[in-house]
Image 1 (spheres, rainbow, N blue to C red):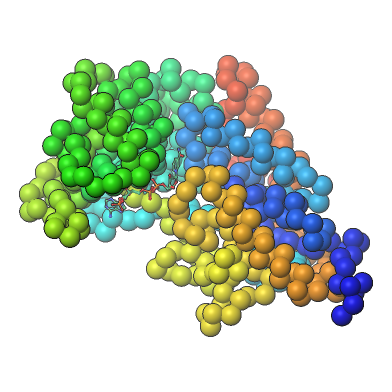
Image 2: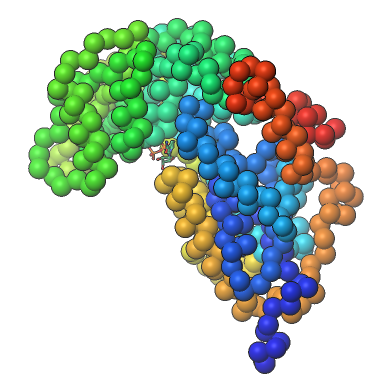
Amino acid sequence: MTTDETAPDPARPIKVAILGSGPSGIYAVQSLLKQEAFPVEVDIYDRLPTPYGLVRYGVAPDHPNIKSVVGVLQRVLESPGVRFFGCVEFGRDVTRTDFEEFYDAVIYATGASVDRALGIPGESLPGSYPATEFVAWYSGHPDAEQPFPLDAESVVVVGVGNVAVDVARMLAKTPADLAHTDVPPAIFDALSASRVRDVYIVGRRGPEHAKFTTKELRELGELVNASVHLLPDEAAVVGDAQHGKIVRANLGVLAKWLEVEQAQKPRRIWLRFWLRPDEIIGTERVEGLRCERTKLDDEGAVVGTGEYETLPAQVVLRAVGYRSLPLPDVPFDAVRGVVVNDAGRVLEEDGSAAPGEYVAGWLKRGPTGVIGTNKSDAAETVRALVEDIVASGAAQRPAPPSIDDELQARGIEPVDYAGWLRIDAEELARGASEGRERSKIADWDTLRSVSGRS
Ligand code: NAP
């Protein structure tokens, strides 16, 4: 093959579909636009009429600094050659075969949208919910059940990661703290009317094993209306194990809180450790969480001590990590909860790479890391894609047909980027009339009609 034959043809851009418009999908688009091996055209699909995935529906409303990454993501969506296809569901409206027919490559980036279960008795009692459901509710997700039953005085949050800290903080905040956030009015009213007094955050291991980050932990101690309480026997770390930077900083925050007895405020956050959930107690509904006390054995493994404690609660929220859902027809490792892949290349059951298919983000590596982690993750996937496209000589073959006519023939009417901008503008206008920056629309009918879709 001569150099001329392999040179990219500028008139023949490589067509890539991205499934999922959260940070991982949009960072993948950014990487595709930055690479110089060939020109690209990117269609980014989402089940929702709104882009930004977990930035819109996972980052807590009182964390505007984290949400400000939207500015970067928006610039990517507005780049020439990029189109948004909202309200299109994979497996129903478009399939793996469609992506094969209408694109040179696809990147799956649907994240991890569902909860993990504890697998203990009582988990299905009314009052026991995944934290993901509570997060979706306060984030105004259109699939969230309304209203969230927030009638408890005492709530247990299981897990000591950042999601647990987010939900505990949201439960402990006052209406004044939330007045400037983007939570929809009905949800703001429900949070304002909450009678919660005690929030228990429960770790099954010690504070040195907690997954939260220091900034998030520290914030709990800065709440106007809530005090943080620890039990010295649980929170003081014994032993001389070497810890990493984040753990050392976390332990420093806990040590400061332990030094001075905290005056009790109207709401109290109890950070409890060494308690392994054993059973959610209750007959008609949740009445408490029974936990077995744990300790480290001589090998450093966490073991039960046979001692039990029941934390009183009318609501138990499990914040024990997210889980990805398999995509129809796409190879999935049900144990690890990820699409089977090698550095982003989707692998078939026999271990061979599925031509033109890639994966990025939580669906590729599992639900870990912060938003920024998805940037390097997506870059790795795009490097594999570019390498493969160049090696396959795709640019020298005719372009795949456009999907637009096919979608129309199927009666599928995507919400395009202009449709999302109409939703965006309406939310900003509602916010302005309520004296805040944005007021989210939380129901499907209004989202659809405001977007201009019937
Ligand atoms: P996570 O960080 O993995 O924490 C999960 C927690 O659940 C851990 O404490 C884990 O304990 C515990 N757990 C798991 N299974 C359990 C069980 N059966 N019983 C009791 N406890 C159990 O997950 P996450 O909080 O959902 O967060 C997901 C990712 O999003 C993380 O990377 C997080 O940092 C990120 N995030 C970031 C922010 C932020 O930056 N502000 C906000 C929210 C989320 P073990 O360690 O013992 O397994």
